[in-house]
Image (cartoon, rainbow, N blue to C red):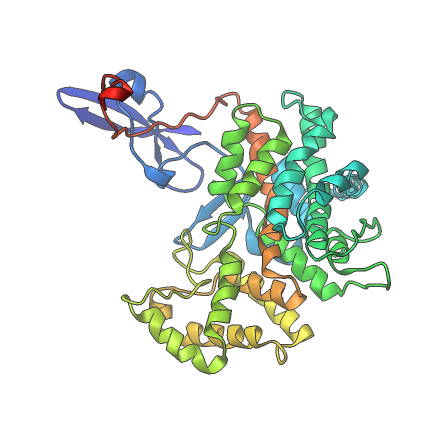
Amino acid sequence: MTKNDRSAKLIIGNDTYELDIINPTEGPDVIDIRKLYNEANIFTYDPGYTSTASCDSRITFIDGFKGKLLHRGYPIDQLAANSHFLEVCYLLIDAKLPTEAELESFQETITAHTMLHEQMVNFFRGFRRDAHPMAIMVGVVGAMSAFYHDSTDVTDPRQRKIASHRLIAKMPTIAAWAYKYSIGQPFIYPRNDLNYAANFLHMCFAVPAEDYHVNPILSRAMDRIFILHADHEQNASTSTVRLASSSGANPFACIAAGIACLWGPSHGGANQACLEMLKQIGSVDRIPEYIKRAKDKNDPFRLMGFGHRVYKNLDPRAKVMKQSADEVLELLGVKNNPLLQIAAELEKIALQDSYFVEKKLFPNVDFYSGIILEAMGFPKSMFTPIFALSRTAGWISQWKEMIADPQNKIGRPRQLYLGETDRDYVPIENR
C-alpha cells in the first residue's frame, strides 16, 4: 500500500482535516479515515459498507465494470480452464501457484484428512431428518473445535496451517453426509483413490448396495463449480469470517459463522432462487409472458440469475459455467426435465432480447450453476452447502491473511444513533 501524492481535505465548520489517499495496485483510490474519529470526533456513515474498504488484501480483485475477477493476479477464466480446485486452494492460501512437488504434497495432505472423527457421526444423528443441510453444516463445522484441539490456537502458524488443511479436506465429507442424512441413506466414507470433486460426488450419490462410477464430465463440472465459487473478495460471508476472526475466535467457529451468513437467501441462495423461478414459469410456452412481466417496472416479478450486483457487465465466471452447463446437459439431456427445457429457452431469449442486452442483464454464474446441479440430481437444499464447500478455500485465505496482519484489531463498526436521549427512569406505578 502506498500513499498518493494527492490528499483529501474535509472541512467541518472552521476546521480542515487532511486525509491521506492510498493507491491500490488495482481499483479506485481509497481515502484513509482511520484517524478521523480521534482528530475530528466524527464518524462516517455507510450502511452495508458499499463505499468503505474494511481491510487491505492481496487475495482477490474484482472490477465489476470490466467483468474482471483475479485470484492472486490470475484471471478466473484461465484458472477454470487450466487448473483444478485444489491447485486454486493452494494459490489462494499460499499466494502462489505450486510447483509439481508442492501440489503433489498438498493433495496428499488433503486426501489424508478427508475422514471425520467417528464420534462426529453422533452430531449428524442428533439432528431431525428434515433439518436443512446448511443447519447441519453450521453445527458440525462449529463442533470441529471440540475434536481437533491441536489446531485451534490462532497465534501458532503451524496450527493455522493444520486447521486450513483439515477444513478444506473435511468440508466435502461434511456436506455429503448432511445430504445423505437428509434423505435417510447411509453415510459413504471418502475414497483416497478419487480426486476432490469425484470423491464428493461419490459420497453424495453412491450407496453400499451397488457400485457407483463418477462420470468424468460431471466430475470436471463440479470441480469448475468449486473453482468459480472459491473466493469473491469482501462479500457478506467473507466479511463475517473476518469479523469473527478479529476477536481471536478459533478457525472452526469463524468458518461456521461464514456458513451461517452464506445461508441467507440474499447471499448464497441465488441459484436456488433461479430454480424456484423456473418452477414458477412452469413451461416453455409461458416464457414470453414472464419476459413481458420482467420488463414491467410495476410488476414485482424479477428474472433471477440475470445481472449481478457487483458485475455491471458480463460475469466472468458465467462464460466458464455456461460451458460446463452445455457439457452436462449434452451428457444428461433435457428432454425429460421440464425445468432444464425452460432454462435453455430462457437463456436463448435473454441473450437475444434487446431489453436484456442493453441493460446488460446477462445470465450469471448462479443461473448456470443451478442448472448444472439440478441436472446432476442435487435437490435445491444442497445448492448452498455446495457453495459453502467451495467458498471455504476463500474464507480460510482471508482468515489467514487477517490473522497474520500486524494491523489486525478487533472489528468495531460504529453507528448513527437515532434513539432517545437521556431519560429518567419512571417507577412502574407512575407509568
